[in-house]
Image (cartoon, rainbow, N blue to C red; front, side, top):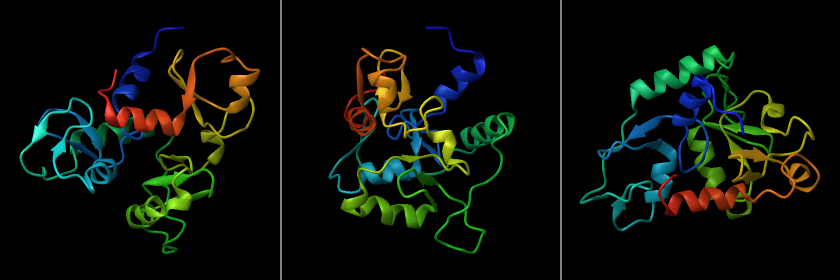
Length: 191
């Protein structure tokens, strides 16, 4: 496997270890670990005690979650550098002014914070592949097979589609379902 470029290395540091996506409204805990605000809220929604999903540091009371402006600005600068500066709007709001926080690949819709919460809370929609907001759904599909990226290759540490695992360059590699990798990262410290 080729070594990562400096941009790729920085990009990997700007990913939430809960959802595996680029930070959306990043929040930093007192232990120093950062997560998407929505991911932390979801992880702590029914919790009786509060701990860092990455290092397991415990907090006596629920921490106040605030947006980490420095990390948010860095994420935005990298998006501008990648030509991704266009803000994706919520498809449900209809006002054209409410930015999306996530895009569902199965529904092919982008959701703002409040509509995404409704999507997450619906048991029938929980297995949907949800990614950072994207205007082009093709960005979240396999470049070779045009299929949904639904697996995580632990060998190459990359997202892959089912065709990649059967007949593609990831054939024979150890892969997990993306949603299973997501759950695993919620319960164990990130590598």
